[in-house]
Length: 389
Ligand SMILES: Cc1cc2nc3c(=O)[nH]c(=O)nc-3n(C[C@H](O)[C@H](O)[C@H](O)COP(=O)(O)OP(=O)(O)OC[C@H]3O[C@@H](n4cnc5c(N)ncnc54)[C@H](O)[C@@H]3O)c2cc1C
Image (tube, rainbow, N blue to C red; front, side):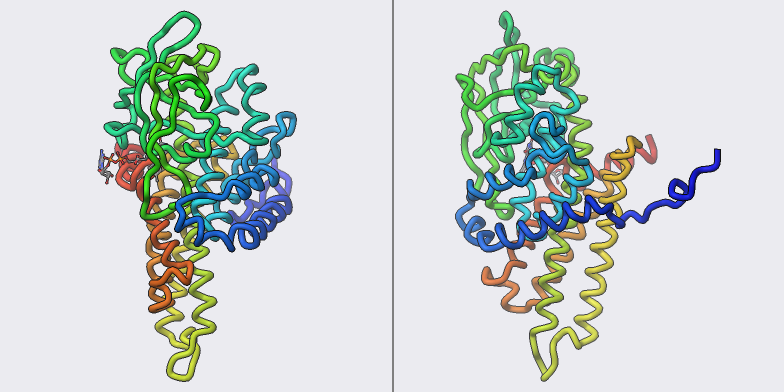
């Protein structure tokens, strides 16, 4: 069959639909006007404002893909990535709060939860509950399935014991996707994902990390001390938690690519603005070819990141394989974020090195892109495995 003209014409990756354009404009305005004035203070305090998180809920940013029947926006994965990108241009901490909620927590529940779990948790996640995704442990980072948190069957429940480390959104959280092994002899095939509520007896949020970057985003230890979790709170099947982890992290990586893309865009915008204002030798520094070429290189870098991130997101939406593409997007975008933020600091000269201007924070924030949701080496290993098996 000959495709119709509209089907035959492939859409440029960066061309957004009208709905996507409107969504992006709304998030951009909100980020600049509402979050922008508080970024420095939240970074210094290492604490994200509760009122802004409430506004995330009000705007639907915490429930982009949750269907409307559960109080969500009924939007797309691509829109979730757009939100993460736009927020990151202003504040990568704001961005990761929304990122974890949408692309890890909501996403896993939408894909794997049964009807009862969907009814119990999706409306809360759309309206008021911040979610966390708890896989990592002290001895299980890149080797995530070496986790030692255990679940022991006891009647209609599992009793969980262990410690989780580095858990984003833990401080503000109400619901935690906790990965525990219920059958260590079966190796990773014992890993099971539990829906743990904050007020379950024996559960506690521990030490909050004091970090280099994304300081306003909370990163905490979780303590599970004989937490009795009903079997009705197993997400997906018992022993299939490894599959949930692999698949959600694959999608999460695209959005972390989006976060790093947004960060790089933010840094570039600050650099361009400054280059047009700052005068030396009787001219704006943007009139010097040396500065122009730096800005041009930064713009090329940002565009490479954008194409990889948007392509991976569109592939996911089209239901096509995107394992390598997600790893490439995260790897490249985090590299670009670091380089572009660094160059932005240099273009602003001395003031770029101070806290009076936002680029030093973006430079600090960029570092996390090469670490969480799989380090850059782990992304390379994923890409290489696809090449050589
Ligand atoms: C701010 C922050 C937020 C986080 N949020 C969450 C969260 O919400 N939920 C969650 O579960 N986890 C979270 N993490 C954990 C994060 O995913 C891990 O830190 C990350 O996977 C790396 O693990 P690790 O820190 O143990 O480093 P390690 O695995 O010890 O790695 C150390 C170094 O060794 C390298 N390395 C390790 N193995 C290999 C290999 N096979 N080949 C080549 N190089 C290798 C790594 O690339 C890295 O450079 C967060 C971490 C941070 C810092």
